[in-house]
Length: 455
Image (cartoon, rainbow, N blue to C red):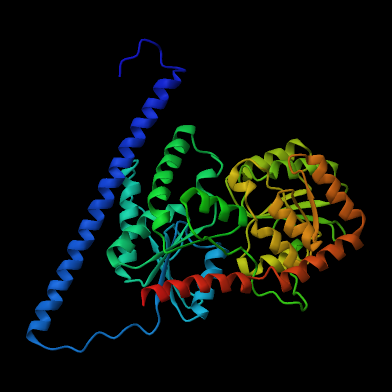
């Protein structure tokens, strides 16, 4: 491509280059998908021929069906703190399904482990790094692993699991479930370049357009995402399976002292603790929560999670003179999150409407705070307001405004009785309504319908 300019701000050329790159990726993906299907079909054909040859020489009894239908899930993370996947696997296992989880391998984690009677296999990424090709090779490896397990049902956790699951579904004739944890095409760009973000979204837009309508069932986490997916892909029914907490009843809660965690040793016993649970990522309003602490009296803020924004948040705390009152803590096991949360004073969900995914979200942390019996300060989104105000569990504010966050925190700190009453109402709402058992029933109904169709 010859240009008669220095190619510094030629947006047309940049767009043409991006489009050409996207077309190349799409063509490569199509060739890869077809090649993968052909290879697996050849292997399946060879197996069938070998079986026929054996049967020609001796009569064997008819193969016996498995005692329990096997669900194979694919999640594109190391599967260490993914509570939604854990809860769904546990629910299916309790209902009599065999469950296997396939995840990405990382250093320091076993390639195979057994967790709560669920087999977890981690698949290594290619060691050589050739953009595009290494990605496709890993997709191929994942699909081969899925096929090797001979699943009865496949379960794709988010859009980045769709292609390997669809390949395996095509080869094994097993139906698949699409589980949208997020509105994948409307997530924030984060640390990626604009070009990378554009190409990635274009690729997954194509994948979703081709594969989501082929799913035997689609489930997701919030009502706005349900409506969005039904409209975008003309789906008849998307099932709502929210991220409600599990193992909650109306009895006493065994709290663990959050001040005992590393990094909290210097927090005074009488100091109120403002808690944030979850990933430290851009677009979640974490900067606004730290800025709000400037206007909050005496309280300390504890961030319980990990993410790429950690260093930025530490630097912001130092600039604002809050280094001794803002504490960034390492995550704890999912089974202990609610117990540690119960020793905090207030739980904050400061997500801002930086993208459609966040605007439509119904964060898991809301229900964890409520289950822990602490009052909630949260974003004023319609679906969040319905839960927080509808149950009387806390306050909703404009999380774009640090002073508004601070006012809500100060109100609850200065009136502990109001906070205690909100916490009690929130815990009661979780015990009666927002509990995982209700969401699990919807999940099991989805799987029951798939089983009826396959008979």
